[in-house]
Structure formats: C-alpha cells, structure tokens
Amino acid sequence: MHRSRLSSAIIDCNDLQEASRFWSGALGVEVASEDPPYVFLRGGAGGLQVGLQLVPEPKAAKSPVHLDFETDDLDAEVARLEALGARRQRFVEHWGIMEDPHGNEFCVVPRRPEEMPSDAADWTA
Amino acid sequence: MHRSRLSSAIIDCNDLQEASRFWSGALGVEVASEDPPYVFLRGGAGGLQVGLQLVPEPKAAKSPVHLDFETDDLDAEVARLEALGARRQRFVEHWGIMEDPHGNEFCVVPRRPEEMPSDAADWTA
Image (cartoon, rainbow over all chains, first blue to last red; front, side):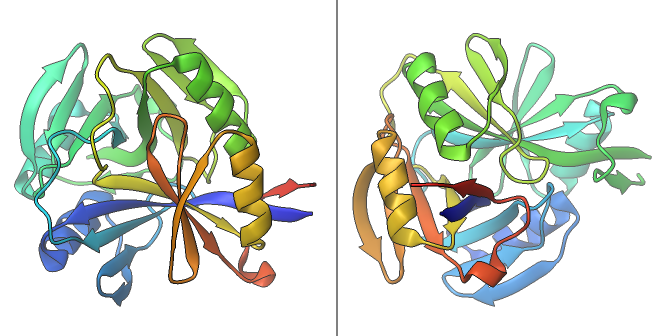
C-alpha cells in the first residue's frame, strides 16, 4: 500500500521576486521557502501549495491549465488583483478572466457570501 | 470587506469523458458535477477542486502552470498513474515528470511516509 495526494500548483515566471510579490499578495499568504529556481508559498486553498518556478523561456501563448479564485464580491476582488499588478483580460458570462504579471491567465468566479468556505481570506478595501 | 480564496485548478482536454476517467482515478475522487464544457471533481487536496474543460484546440506545447502529486512510494505511484493512462516522460533529480492523456505535464514528488498529510489517499497495488 502507498499514499499520494495532489500537493502543489506550480506557476512559471521570468522573475521570481515579482512573481512571489504578486502571488503572495493575491493569495494573502507568505513565502514558505525560497530555493531557486523555486519559491513555495504557504497554502492558499486547503492543503494545496502554490509554487513559482523561474524559467528562461517567454510564456507560452495559452496555458492548458489555469487556476480559479472564488469571491463574494467580483468587482472588489478584480480591483484588488489589479492593484497587485494583474491585468483584466475579458469577462465571460458571469466571471472575470485576468492575467498575472507573467501573462498566466486565471479566473475570478463570483459566489454568494454563504457559499464561501471558512478558509477564504478577508480583504478590507 | 470582501473574501476570496483559490478554489480550482482547471485542466484543458479534448475528451471530457476520458479526462474525467483519468483525473478521478488519479486523485481517487468522484465527479461532483457535469456541465459541459466543464466537469468538476470532488476536492483532491484540501478544499481545492480540480475541473476539466473541453477545448476545441490541440494542446499547447508546454504548460506554464502544472500540478504536482506527492507520494511516499514514487515507483508505485508512477506505476499506478501509468495504469490509468498517464505517460512517463522523464525523471529530473529525484522526481518524475509524467503526462496526462491530453499531454498535460504533471510531476510526482517523493516524500517520506511521515511527511504525508492526513488527507492523502491510500492505494493498494
């Protein structure tokens, strides 16, 4: 018998310091370890850890894997992420598509307040 | 004040049924909802939900975002994932790089048994 679990989502970047600043701010968590070409952040959703990986190549056109945020206030969350350096790309149906400073797409999905899990971060404008 | 959290990792595929079979097997979790072009699985790491998205285009060359598994038995985990349809791509240092049936890379990282979180799945060969 052996054991396994999904442990991390690793995001490419061309600047570890900039990526650490953006993603630690976006998730509201601190850097857990720096070991270039990797930086790991403390968990941002349950036990999942977000990692950043320095890569030499420019970003691929479109990622076949992306991350979603959920929030009880879409406009406030988009504004918060823009202030950190994310770019608003487009809105599809009821959610927003944004890009991190490396150009990686992620989505911001609205939820009703009562749908938000207890481990969501509280943000004050 | 508003709230947000990282909620999901969404993985592109060209076949929702095949992707659901592989990823639900890989994570040991059931399908939570089917609403094409999306299928969501029950959480595979803490509160993070893995989703599958049907896309018309072929896979991009290399994803700038990838997921990691952690396991207390690398050989057994790689064999388990191969049996589900993953392909072994290469080994870098002490971890394995594999591809899901859509060609999305993911890593399998070895841990000592005492490092494995309590929410890891138990697998019997």
